[in-house]
Length: 405
Image (cartoon, rainbow, N blue to C red; front, side, top):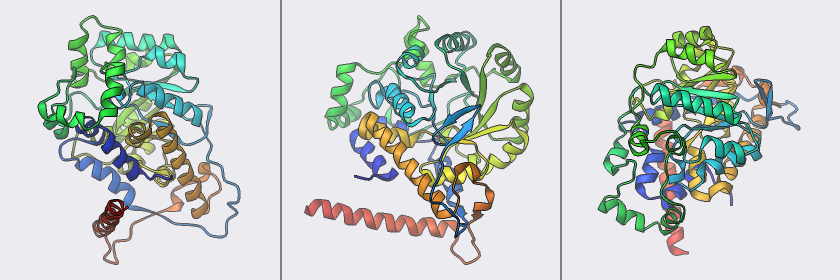
């Protein structure tokens, strides 16, 4: 059965308790940044070139001298064991089979060493600076475990205000309210897996700090070192002997500082819309970052399918990071669900290349894009509203069909 992203999202919503689904699905405030991230892609249309030989198509890309089967990486996401026990390992193995990178979060529920031991693929490590001593320990562990790409996240000096998490009482250790407990009982498969494997813990923190509960709570609350500055980034650059990517860059001048410090690349990102609600979409910020930053620019945020991947690459990104879509697959089908999401994205990229008249993803450029033309009165809000009405009509018909079946 072929599933689109919304199918996987609905399946994840059915299979996860609300407290976990909202953690995966939600953003800062009322989710305006998530909507803005998507709208940036909706405002870009393709400009197809007909009568081009696209009988053979290449989706391969090269980055940092390494070959990848797609211009896609699995973004760092925390507490994946709350979705499925062993979630980080599942994501990493699916990425390895697909020939794409996997970025392990500091807030993972499978440890740095465990993932490195059990996955034969390109694994990157994402660093949160909770405090200096823990950060130094994590960097040393990643280096010792054989990681060659360090992703420093710089857009979390404090936690964003995520209303859906606050309303659900999301915290670590988990404390189920009566409402959450009743909801969890409606998801027996999820409860069974959690009981068998134990409630998720932040493996990298518990392995490296004696005051585990307090440190894990601080990590989940994103109580980072708000004093971490550009001087500290320079020191990290001096200590880390391999590739350093800086994630969370939106401004041109910050991209230039990353270049001057010697970062190997930047990831244009607003943290998936989970930190600051009123902030530019990464796709919107991409051109100015490319113009001023290091040679390698990746994009994270709003990418949901293969067509979005092609748009991002055409706009100048060498690779895109995808988080939520992979987590919907993890929730809906475990490791095989992640693989099916990746395969769906791959098929979308291949089909899109054929339809726009480009035989290789490496040859896509801005000439294949054009902005949505609002002069005919069909502006992006009108299109979005029309699409939403069509979608809800389809949903209603599907629900009636299922009831009558």
